Length: 150
Image (cartoon, rainbow, N blue to C red):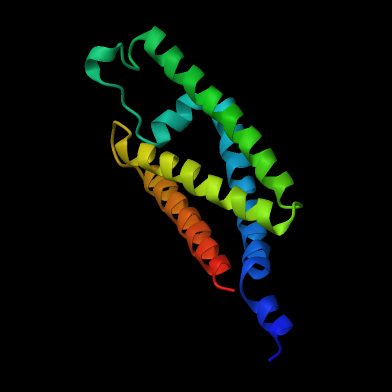
């Protein structure tokens, strides 16, 4: 194999190509979650088992429920923006795409930690979100590591 052929199957270019795919799938995932959070935050809270602390006003308290719904809608709006940026950065050069993957490791890691520490029951959707978050982070980490070998 020539050096050019080796570069084509490994290193920055190959990793960036695969990261573009992961960014696209992640953008679709965040788009769906963002729309759902904006449209139906109360249902989403129930589906993920979100329960506020009893002394915090709680979901039973109308003002507590409204605050949770507002926060989830704000999260939905943020996810829409992140989805758009992920989709657009796919067209960038290889190194900016690798940078976007590093950003997603940090952001996805924070979201995964917050999913683990969420107060409330462990529901099937919560487990699914945790699994999806872990898979995305692992994909980004593996591809970033693969980009370092050249």
